[in-house]
Image 1 (tube, rainbow, N blue to C red):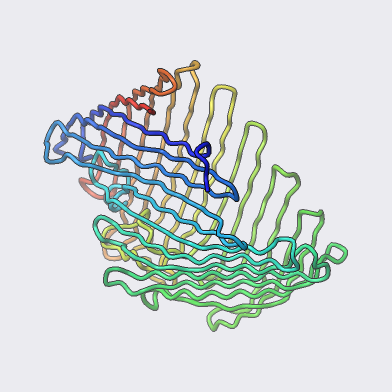
Image 2: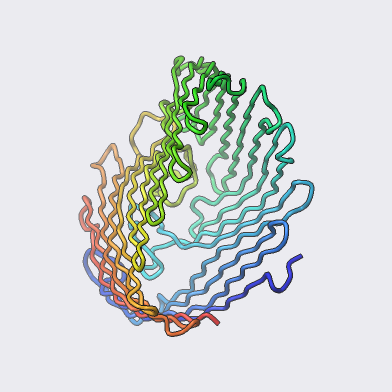
Length: 463
């Protein structure tokens, strides 16, 4: 039960004027338009005992176009999260979202609701989790869930479910340790695509630290059942491992693994974890997985004003509209390799944010490069508090995409975005924002580039 004092409700209304000199972001036949937007929404934050919480943000945006009233459109966005204790270690969680994303990134990765080249995505998930007493001899945490995702154009609609389980020793066990982790993910296509399922199991069982040495056995199992043999694979390996702690929180690890998979030979694997201070940590590892050599890296450092985080991950994914290309197979299981770097410097009145990313996407078990994707980009923003009421922001963003083809030349697209705006807080309820933005796309395909200029004025009122 949540008392009224724990609930905050914030209705919002607003509007904007946006002028674009190339609304459809076309290479030729530019169409200018003045877009009037009216929006209304509500925000709810509720917090209760036992970690019970609810968060909701919902907004409706009505767009009116000066060049053609037939383009007038209504858009909605939603963010909802809730969590409630059920007792005896069980919790119920729910989430839902509504977004508008680019229909296909090989057509226009920079699309938004003003250009209209977007699709609405609705997602929902309901789960039940469990956590045992953390002071017992063994710890058990787990979660089961059901999920659904629907797109406006019916490409990539699915429902499904899954589970995650972790079983480990508790703090009272002194001689042995064990960690057993497993995940299961199932997606059922609402179209003609086959159903897919991903299973991952990892185990470590060994002795507690003996003069800084930790001997143990490890086992890794993966089974990815995709849409066909070209995106399906499995792997099973096991073997002895040794971990050496040269400080209480930093160690080196090496293992020799016997492979039970025909096309993967026995292999060495290793990891390093450095934690010289509570503010700095580094983790790096090498292993072999169902898709071959696998690497993982995470570096994090935080000081009073500067935050740095660099990560590299490799994961098997599918049904991802963020990387979808027209005529692509969204249900296909892909290996996504992603590098990210973010640095935030918070000065007294100015915040600087630099981010860098790169990714590769290819079918899980296919030697063909058809449909593979590569991308990288960088952005830099400055947020400066000019006065108590006035704030200025400037952003530079660059993105580069390469889409692999066999019968035709690869497609290369580059995007630049430059924006600057000023925001004035009239009072605790009213904010005015004015700004300008330039978008540019160049492409290796003929008639596939554009440039666009925008001017905008916004009014937001929290009631």
